[in-house]
Each structure stands twice: as structure tokens, then as C-alpha cells.
Length: 428
Figure (cartoon, rainbow, N blue to C red):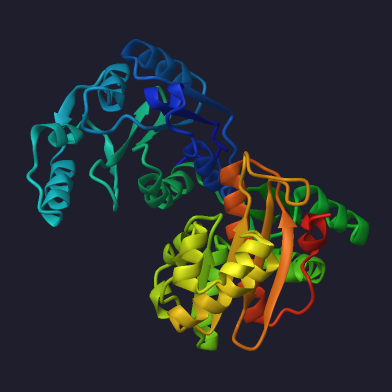
């Protein structure tokens, strides 16, 4: 067992990465998980499915690192080259690995499939390799030492990589004697920008302790705030920093870890015994989609309504023709009637409705592109707000859907007052 801090490099393979058909999210996932061991990738290389180029790059990377993680190229097709190229670089042969074959047979049997020659190719691995179990997909991963470099190979499917990483991290701990480990607390927030969050921390806690690393990861629709320590003795100090953030951002914090907005809403609704529904126009079903991605959503979500046209707003939700004619589809009156209709049609206790102008056309001086009306409430009280996200169409839909879930979250959690982003996004 080595006790050195290993130099780690990444190699991502696949023509689809080079062409832009697939966006590389795997390197970010790998780097994020490695950070928990105090490791940061020194270099990242992306190559297409070129046998000669892969062989040259693998050999060079193994010369200059103690760990090389290769992601991709383990599939059943002729352009999946990782196993064969790595065997060539290592001076090993390829052989059918009995445990990999058993995995393939069990994977196919579970799905009622016949193991064909193409799939069987995934069991042809370099001799002397060690398997990395894949609990999700058909292709196992494997590791092999090449020129004193530990090479770890994984499939390119993000869900499969994510499921395999815990085993890989444990092997790195064991082989390199890694005892330094970051303890990372991640907070998921909505309605905060990076600069706003950072400035609030600087203004209110200029003496932020150096033992607790504060960092941000921006995304749509959520902003992740991370608090990291590398010593157990600093955990109480991190808890104090967490309390500071709760005081600063409390109503914007959705939850810890990987909590998604819809998950928070589902959990709150379940705890309250409240059924929820949604009526969507400009988001085209995205709110319902976010909710139904959460296991157990059916406990509290009987269904929602996508009423894109005015005719469906009338026939499905009971929006008055006179309202649409006098106020328009993107109006406070319309979304209030959409909420009432969703409550009646679904039998839910709480509903949210959205209607807006996603663009790029369709705006006007008084209702520019990015304008959206939201309404949410129950049979006793319906609240409304008009916001504006003048961004490209899909991002607009994403942010509006998240805002719709956020107003439900706030109502379910009993959070009073208005969110900070209401003032920032309110239509002037």
C-alpha cells in the first residue's frame, strides 16, 4: 500500500463527446467525488474513437500519473475500444473474463434478453485486470496497473458511473493509504445568485474561519453552497457556519445533499397530508414532470393539466372566455382561474398555475418576452405574482417551473413574506 497522494488524470472517450452530440458531465461528477478524498484531477483529456490516438494518449498519461480514470468505450459496438487499446498498451492479451460473462448473462436474463455476440464483447477484457462492479448496466468496469499507474475504466453512461464510483473511491483509499478526507456539507438553494450569496456572507461574516471552505456551484435552477472541512475537530465550527447560512438564506434553502425542489415539495405535502396539482401553459408540463421524477409522487400528486391553448384553458379548467378576451392568457385573472380550475378538476388541496411568454417572439411593451404570471393557493386563498426571466426559452421554462414549485414549498412550509427573488424578478 502506497502512502503518497496520487496524481490523478482523466481520459474521456467517444466521438459523440468530440462532436458535441453528448455533453460531458462525467468529468465533473468524477472530480466532485474525488474531492472528498482531497484529490483534484491534474489533467483532463477528451478523445474520439481513434485507436492509434487512444493508445498514444493512454501511454503518455500512464507515464505522468499514479491514477488514470478512463471513462467511456466499454460498450458492445465496434467503436468501443477501451479494453482492446488498454490491453495493447499494457502488453496484455484480451480474454473473456468469466465473472464479466456471468454479469452479462444475469443482466440479460433479468430483462428477458438473449445474450448476443455484440453484448458478449463486453466480457472481453485485458488479462490480469480486476473488475469494478456495475450494478446498473451491462458493462462491468475494470482496473489494471500500467507502468505503475492504476488505470480504472468505467462506462460512459452517467448513471452507471455514479453507481460504480463508491467502489472506485474505496480502492483508491486502500491502495494509496488516503486518510485525509474532506467532509462536505452541501446545501441546495433556489432564488439566490452566486454573487448575491457571496456578498451577503462577506458583509455579515467578514471573519469567516479559514478552517471551513465555502464554495458555490451555480446551476439551473438551483445554487449549491458547500461547506468543507478536512479535520473532524472542525466539524463543530462547520456547524456554526451552517447556522450562519441558515440565518442568511434560510427561506432559500431547499435541503441538504442532492435535494431537488420537487422532492422538497413532495415531502412537505406528504407530511402535511396535502394533495397538490398544477395548471401549466408556458412550461408545457415541466412542473408535472419534475414532480413525477420523485419516487412516491403519486401519494400527493393526483395529476396536473397542460392547457397551452385558450380553448383548453376554458374547456378543461373553466377559465372564462371574457377573462381571456379582456385580460389575455398571460394575466393575473387568468392564472387565478387556472388554479381554481385545477383544484376542482383534480380534487387537490393546493395548486399552482403559470402562464407566460417564453419567446423568442410574442412579447409586447407591457408584456415583454420572459413575462410570467404565477398563482398558487387553495380554495380559501390564492396568491399571485408577475415575474420576468428574459432568457432563452428552455431556461425560462426551467426557472418558471422551479419558481412554481418554490411557491408551493413556501406555502407548505408556512414561510411568510416574499422571496428575495420576487423583488429582483418582478416586472417593472
